[in-house]
Structure formats: structure tokens, C-alpha cells
Image (cartoon, rainbow over the protein chains, first blue to last red):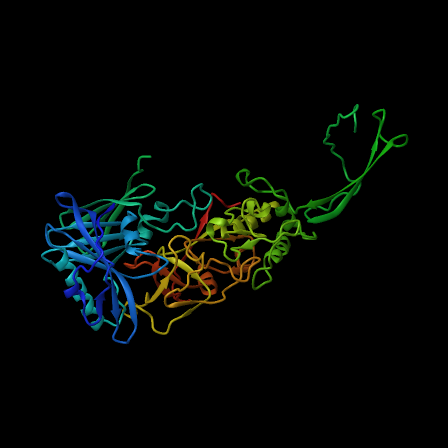
Length: 232
Length: 320
């Protein structure tokens, strides 16, 4: 799903990304491309990942992975932040590559969908002239959030409950079935379609079968139904 | 019996004890001795028979005919052993009690053993999900699930073990699928919680929990975010089960039992209800809220009488 198109050992936006509380870590950047959906069909979006050191006002420090997703067509960008963990390197990259993640490049914003026990949705309506500008703007926004919020840096997420509406068997075989795994949690193997239907959203998520999700304009679940079993 | 040099065969010979068994009573004859005589002319032995020695075998007498469905067969010796124990039960209630004492001290696991005294472990130290038996047959046989000297099983294996044991005594039970109602992960006791959660504005999901990607707790992560690892509830054969975070759990309901009907053979405890399960065993729940892989938001369990986040579902396909 995700293709690395360039790995650059250097600073991407050195002059803009070194703030008082958030500063880019040298030699951690790389640029990738990612598949997205749009009203015109499939699109390719740019992703830049790099690490930042965060100094919180209370003195705590944290190193994080930042993923800036940029739509060159509209200029919209969105970013993801995750604490760096040695045990889980590039943890958002893992997620982006899992197929559990889908992104829609709309005319008014980028919208990211992640299928967990809930459907996690993040929006990015801000614009930048290019990927460097998006990177710098993301760091500026993080800087501002470190000052304003009591929480550690975290992504703002709209949460739409999904598990009860769809049912756990969508993702996980039951105990006793041949491919049962106790580590299976609710997820999609792939978000195969994201489209707009008027004000509504229509997603098709794929795992043990294909499931349609229809969301309203505020991402509340309107309906869901099983539509097919994926071809073997 | 020998017929010519180097030619032997085995015969199945029905015989009747000269002492009738008491109806509806578990008994254990250990050993039952049979004295063998061979008649040389086909007549009933009275005199003139050749002595063929004695044989001794344990004889288990169950309370009632086995009700284990064909799909759950074979009936393993450990099932019968745990059904009968030393015998003496003359009712289903007594038989359930005798069996349950092999699984539970009344407040925790009794470290249940196979017919020949081998221990069975609920997630032995450093043994993760994929190294544990998922059903009772390999658990009691120890096939392919031995790590070091231990045989480990998941909750589903211990669930089927208890159901199979009850079925051997003719007692029906239900397979109960336990899951968080909202699909989040169940985090079992015990953990310490940071006084300064990472996400206070997202209460009650305010604590950050870090786990492995894949097997949540094996190998043991070096840090758990806002939660601290602490000694928790014991499992069969193991004071500190290696796994404490679960998508699902499996327990047994015995509809004919008085008092608590929900039996948890993995931990050796009983519950009155889903709320009771949450109160006794679940410290909280974890789910991803825009988190990267391996990171979760954790919230504490809600104590009754508030609605629990646990659902018990009877799975008729696996009930015996």
C-alpha cells in the first residue's frame, strides 16, 4: 500500500522545524508515497516521516515519530504523531502499511480512516504550498498544542463505534475454528473503497467478508451490511 | 493365549463383576483385580482350568452416561479421572463439587492435574498465546505445547477440559464466550496506575498503555506506559500467568448448579454474572483511539451497579 520513494539523510525543514518545544531530530527523515481515494478515483499522496524531540512545559521529554501526509493536488495536509518505541519502530508506518488505514483526498480536506474496534477518523483541512511547508506547519501546530493542552501530544480523533454494529466475526474466527487466534482483534485487512454519496460517506472494508459502512457527514454510522465474501 | 509359536492375539472378553455397582454413584476401583483361568475344553471353569494369572486396572465409574458430543470426542482418561476423583458422589451437585475442587481452592486455582499427576499450566512464564494449547486434548496429552517442562493452555483449553469432565458424568454445561461489549481489550488484574495519566482530557480513556505488536505481553515489554506491571490473579499451575490482556475469554456455565453458575477453570473462581466477572477479574479496558500500533488508551473498569462492559454469550456449537 505504501511505497518508499526516497530516503534522505538530512534535515527536511531545519530552519522551520526547530521550535522551543518541538524540534526535528537530524538524519531521521524519509519521504514516501501512499495510495488514497478521491472523487476522481485513486490518487497518490506524499508522506514524509521524521522524528521530533518534544520538551513539555512540565519538563518531561519525549521523542516522537511524525508522519505528514500531503495532497499535492489540493495542498491539504494532515499529520500523525507517535511516541518512538524501540520495540515498535515506525509504529504508524506499520499501521499505514497494514491495510487497516485509508485516506480520502477531498476538495475541502484530507480524511483518514482507521478500522479498530471503533472507526477512528482524523481530518486535515489546513493547506500548505508543498510538502516542506506542510512539514513546517505540522511542527508549528505541535508546538502550539504542547503549550495549550494538558495531554501529551496526541492525534485528535473522531471515534465511531463499529464493533457491536458489525460483529466480531467480521475480523476474527471463533475459538474452535481452524484459523482461530487469541491475538485477533477487530480490524480490516483492507479499506477497499472510500466514496462520497451526497453528504454521506461510503466505505467498504475487507476482512473475512466485505462490509459496507455508510456514515453521515459527521461520521456517525448510518448503516452497515455484509456485501460479499472476498474472492479466494 | 498362545496359538503356536510366536502367534498371539488379543481378545475382548466381556465379563460381569460378582459385585453389582451402585446405581448413580461415582466410584473408583484402584485397582480392580481380575483373576484369569483358561478352560481347555470350552466349559465354564470350575475345576480343571489352567491358571492364567491376574490383571489389575483402575476402573472409573461415572455418575451417568457420558454426554460428550461426537465432535468433542475422544473421551480422555484425564476427563474421567477428574469426573470421578475418588468416587462417592451420588448427585450431580456432589459430582460438580468434587470436580470443581480439582480446579479451585474456593478462591483461586487448585492447580489441576492430569490422571497421572502432570501439571497443566495457564500461560506459564514466558509462554505466549501461540505456544499454548487451544483445546483440551493436547493440553492433557501435552502434545506439541511443552515449553521446558511445562504444558500450557489457553483459557479455551481449560474451558473445554472442564466441560468434558462434566460431560463424562452426564452433566450438561454451556460454553460461554466472554468479551468486552465495545470490542476493547480486557486487561485483567493487577496493574498499578500512574497518578498523572498521559491523556487527562480524554477521560475515562486517559491512561496510555503500551504493549507488543503481535503477542501483547510475550516477551514482556520493558515498559507499559502509564500502567505498571504487578502480580495479578493466579492461573492453573502458575501464580503469574504470562498473558494479562485479552480479546476474549472462555468460561463454563453449569445451568444445574446452585449459586454462582459461571465457572472459570483457568483461574479457579466462579462468577454470578458478567458484572461479577468484571468486578473480580478485570481491572480495565484498552483500545486504540488514533493510536499507533502497540499503543492503547486504557480506562478503569466500572464497578457495579453501573453497567459492566462485559458480555457473556452462550455458544451452543461448543456447549456439551
